[in-house]
Length: 264
Image (cartoon, rainbow, N blue to C red; front, side, top):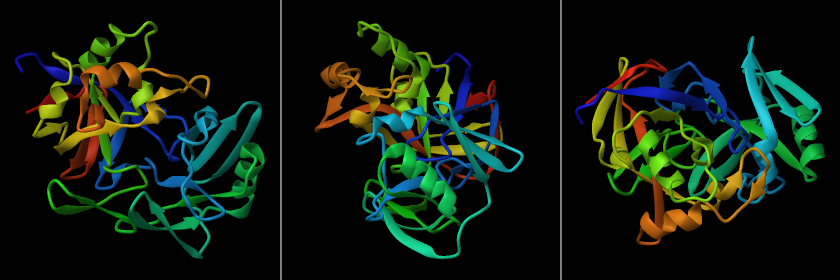
């Protein structure tokens, strides 16, 4: 890897499965970037709600300012405090991982319920350790947020370019919901990263990310399509998993910024 690689884009997703926030810099923590997937929606059975079943979630746009999170959905807007939550703990799961969360407040849950058309609650993970994820590959347990698996997802620009060359209609990297996008030299070289640093933060690559039907949701329209999973499965399928991007953990905390160099 002779060329200097730099961070091109940084994203956080405060509420699991809702739209992204593009950032110039972000504080990397053990559980992921600050405020990244610390919230999620659960249904009446306390099961997490995602774009897989409700692609319209991509049309809810969050912003964070002055200690508040505001959500815009069509002409409607709602906001709540970043730090607020009720005292009653709720036991739920993110896939197979047990997670303890707390409802943000009743009015926020009601707002989402009204606009989604079913009873749901917005909940928050309160502290590090309230959800743990075991890596079957490493036989190691990590403290994580409410993301599907690991705290960070990294994608190289050449991986997306290579895919777009094969598609009839180009897509953006937001289909893959990355946290970090780097300028890369070769398609999917990020699969083979080991330990590296960005700014003063060290990251460890855990494994390439297996993708699901969610990447077929057009985030600008909230409509499920056949691509890009159909095309990806032709050249990125291994043992029934279709890979794109790679999962990371951070080995320490610190701020990383767009333009920072990736050091191996």
